[in-house]
Amino acid sequence: MTNRDTYTNSNIETSGGNEGTLVAYGRGRATRLATDVAGLSGEGSRVILIADPEIAQADLLQGVSINLAASGCEVWLNTSIAGEPKAKDVDTAIEQARDHRADIVVAVGGGSVIDVAKLVGALAVDGQGVGAYGLGAKAFPDRRLPVIAVPTTAGTGAEVTRTSIFAAPDGTKLWAWGEGLHPEVAVLDPELTVTLPRGLTVATGVDALVHAVEATTNRTFLPGIDLPAMQAIGLVRRYLPRAVAQPDDLEARGAMLRAACLAGRAIDRAGTGVAHALGHALGSLAGVPHGRAVALGLDAALSWNAEAAPDRHAAVADAFGLQVDPTASDEALADELAAVFNRFLRELELPVSLAGDGLAEKDAERVAEATLRPENAPMLQANCRHVGEAEALSLSRALLTAD
Image (cartoon, rainbow, N blue to C red; front, side, top):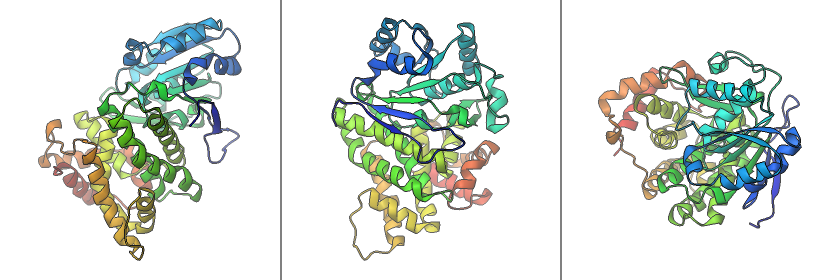
């Protein structure tokens, strides 16, 4: 991959006149955000820059800030989003944008930071508090601020999706969805990801993999989703181990950013499945980080799901690079996929046991109940196999007894 910028429209198809997110890729590309800002909101714009606090402390924002200030922009920095955001964090960021009469929102950070920026863009002009929009209860206002998303992790794909995740006051994970959450521009700069710690590299990378697998095996699967999903699966299989072993490998880091973006495209159209419902349960009950949680959810559900959609899972196995007898049936290939996925997680040293998170088989009913909560309904409905009380309990037991 060269240093030259590349651009692509992130959506497979346009919807409702919204042309989706323009994606720019390039090494060092984040230091030229002023051009994007000027194109969206004019010269001398008032910018709310929402950034991961660890990124700010590591001085990775310096080039971004210098570029924006040199172009005449007024910049207000928000580094308060640490971990998965709460509703109050989002509302505070919205008020900051209103107080400074912001013209545009720029996010530099992981999925949580980008999710908050998307909500600020959607609600700062005419919106109410974010709680009013949880679970799609209310449509987003027509007027909004433009958003530029610059991911510093390679996993969530939030830079190209119409979804944001935040926590209710009781810790329950909520989602908001709508056309108003699409960022106008996403900038993928691999130089921003080379300092990502090993554990986060693994967790975010497997998150992208789970997105791609669920998008292409869900009952909501559409033919146009195959290309980005399968590309993402192949990229993760090839480049995630390299990014883990060689953190400064810009080719591997760039490939993982592209994989996350492609997988984000896929779930934006097809959604996620039971692995995410299980993962959200683990996050709500025990604070298990999202990427690891959904990977463990898929590990528990993959073989079971494959029984209902062996052809789709066989296609995933092929994209993942399984070498098997060419005369093998779809069922055999799909069954082998589950074992290979589990081995992949272990090779990456992702903790598979939840004992260290304070969960055991005795907690299966609690996990199953949390999995079936209303906020997870879209994921359960999209899953390729029906998930009721008995199925949720069985999957929860499998999840909690893995070692």
